[in-house]
Amino acid sequence: MLVHGFKTSSSSKSPLISPFSTLFDSAETLKQEQQDSNSKPAFSFETFMTQKTKSINQALDAAVSLKEPRSLHEAMRYSLFPGGKRVCSLFCIASCELVGGTESMAMPAACAAEMIHDMSIIQDDLPCMDNADLRRGKPSTHKAFGEAVAILASDALLALAFEHIALHTLDVPPARIVRGIGELAKSIGSQGVIAGQVLDISSQRNSNLNLEQLEYIHLHKTAAMLEGTGVIGAVLGGGSDEEVEKVRTFARYVGWLFQVVDDILDVTKSSQELGKPAGKDFEDDKVTYPRLMGIEKSREFAKKLNKLALDQLSEFDPQKTAPLVALANYIARRQK
Image (cartoon, rainbow, N blue to C red; front, side):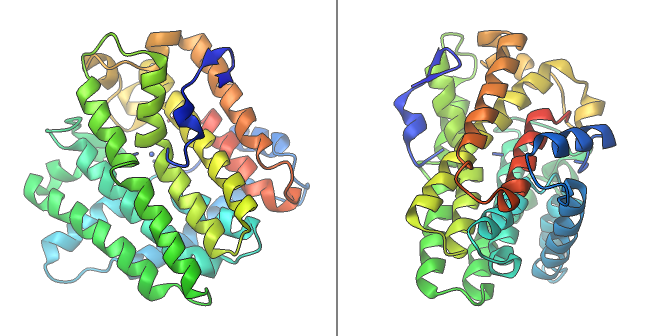
């Protein structure tokens, strides 16, 4: 497949594609996103983000309460709150509503998506992985609680995620719940996020890495998580097989887009602006899109991925696609 003149591997066609903070960068960015979203004038991206994020945070607060062992649950909550952009959970709910489902159908899965996402972040920051001391403008979980508690907290978040979906998803046929759990588990396993992380580690200081290999890493390490959360939302909402596949492809492109933008920001923003160490990829001698393409070509590639993602939504009701369109544009234009 050719994407903006760059040859990509056949792995981008696979159903398998981490880790992803303030919510809005500026009012100006929000206005631009609304203008470009092709949604009806009544839709407000800011209102959508504010209302949904409030609901998600309330649900997460109830799902991960403080209890014994206290240090474990404090570490679990430390990574979840105040949280990042909530992209995974917002994506899950928006995908469910896109196909006719409701927020309540998707909320347990949306919370699970945040738990899994934060599990991956805790592990990604460990000294044996990326060795990052800063995350979302505060010390990483292992710096605040120690490596042992951080690892156990990440394990607990992963286990709780699937428990929460199984026990708290209401008004959804059991067959959909089982299918959705399978999709989400697959997206983070040995053919998904974990596969991407393993390859990312093994590729460090490998200056011979090419675009095709870099694509494979990020379609798994980064895009797979967003794909899993979008697909489970569409499945729980009762989407047809065709609709689910459209969401899957859309999510894959948006997840890929997220990583390209992340690579660009790593070399164009400061640690203070990002809320995490800037220039870490360069310091670790990692191969990135700017390193292989240059910054301007990487920006062009990001625009192409954004367009390819939005093309997947062309056959849906524009009013229902408005949140997903705005989310894709937000990811494309984010500044941290």
